[in-house]
Image 1: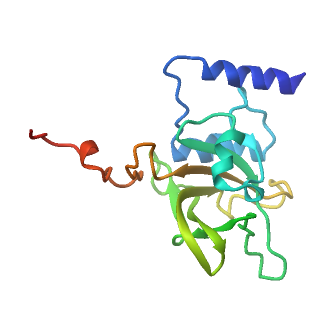
Image 2: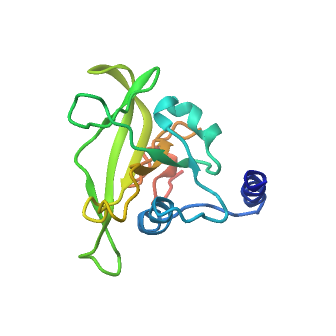
Length: 192
């Protein structure tokens, strides 16, 4: 019964004209991930729980509860055996590769307060270390280790992941940190 009620609420949100689910990084960490870790049920149930590493990225939009260009999931943190605890980020057809070091996410109101960390990954088709880069990008969000004391934190490690593709339907490439790269989307005067 609860599952049906949750699915009903989520589908009702899809029918609302203009409704967009676009939380900030601070909201993802301080509200959604933190509440899920401490077992607080969120209403409506917008972000699903899924081990995304068992699925190829192009299948994820159909598995998400909500999202048009970006999809959100709570993800169990999987560990590779015998490799120092490095997470296993491989799927049937490829792997997620980190693009750099973890980025600190701080509070906008209290810039010295660390809320969590973001790791950006890109999906490669094939097997490591040789694979072909795709347009699929994922951001993994996790709470800082200092926050996760054993007495407060459940034994299961949990991430919140967002996935997106950097190629839109028109073929223009977008990134949250850069301007669009197709001329028709660039700001400024148009001539002609």
